[in-house]
Amino acid sequence: MSIDLHAHFDLTGPWQPDELIRQLREDCPNLRRALMQWHPYLTEADARGWERMDKAIGDAAFCIWVPNWIVSVWPTRAELYQGTRWSAIWSTPRYRHLLRWACFDLAKIFGSDAAIYLPEMVHVEGETLADVLLYLQKTAGAPAATIEAMREADEADDYLDAMFTGTGSYFIDQFDDLPQPPQAMPDGPKPPPDFTKSDWPHTSWPPEIGS
Image 1 (tube, rainbow, N blue to C red):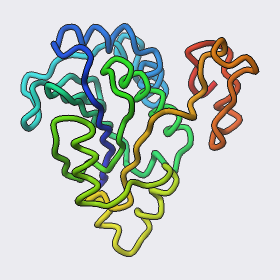
Image 2 (image 1 turned 120 degrees about the horizontal axis):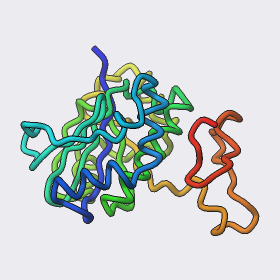
Image 3 (image 1 turned 90 degrees about the horizontal axis):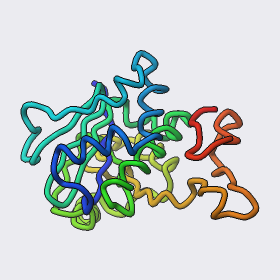
Image 4 (image 1 turned 120 degrees about the vertical axis):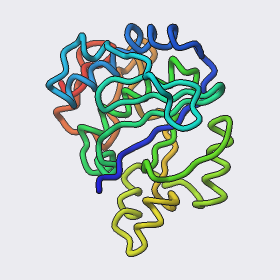
């Protein structure tokens, strides 16, 4: 059984479905590139094809989807389901690059300062991202120090704790190491240390992913 990835966000931005769909379609270039490059069968029209699902998942107010990506929305938080195995975020640099930039776009439109990544089987509770983090800290301990450190939880003898409780397998991404627009950094943006040469340099802004 493949255990996929969830990302959790605060939601202080648009809450109404039509406006959120508009922003997902029009204001998320990095998300669009991630969809098209990680799923080469998707056209740009497909990557802009976010639609409201007929029925929300669980107790979410509503859900919006494109193939392999589902955004679930509550009044004060949002959650991304991404249908790629959770371990890809630390084992596959290209996927990590694509996903983090996609989540950067999502955080921007949601009005969230961070995202929390974790395996899809981990149960969370809370009305805000801070509530979710507090719940995880109580049930699973401290977050992983880095994305790479989540590998240790997956490879441990008690890895089921990582898969189902989040012990050692959740990470808080504040996007601090993502390169900023060149005008904000006079010496030019610097790549994070785990980028591969194929991920850098970027020749435009927002950066072309995987160029």
